[in-house]
Length: 155
Image 1 (cartoon, rainbow, N blue to C red):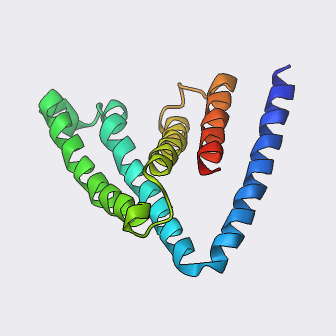
Image 2 (cartoon, one colour; image 1 turned 120 degrees about the horizontal axis):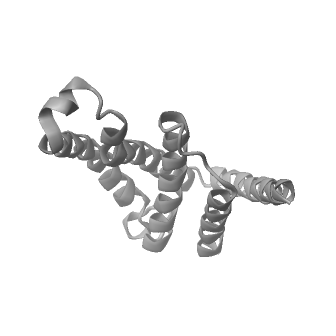
C-alpha cells in the first residue's frame, strides 16, 4: 500500500514538474520577468539554507568544543550571526520578487513559495545531518500538499 502511495506521489510530482517546465518556457519568452523569478527563487533558497543552520545547526553541532564552552548564550549569538546573512538574502529576494516592485510574485505567492522552499531545505538538512530522523510517507504527503498550495495560489 505504501508503494502505491509513493508511486502516486511520484506521478503527481512529475506532472507538476512538467507544468513548471512549461511555465519556465513561457517565462523565458519574457526574459526580464523570468530572470527576476530565477533570482528571487535562488535568493530564497540560499536564505533558507542559512535560516535552517541558524535555527537547527546548533542541535547537531552542540558536541563541538565551542558550543560546549559557550552554552546557550553562545548558541543564540552564533544563530543570530548566521541569521544576519539569511536576512541579507531574504530582504532583496522579497523586494525583487514582489509584484508592486515590478517582480513576478504577489505577497501571498512569495510567502507560500518561501514555505515550500523552507520545507525542502529542512528535509534535505534533516536527511543529511540527522540520520536518526528519517522522512516518512506522511512527510511526503504534506510536502506534496504544500506544492499543491503553490500551484493553486499561482492560478
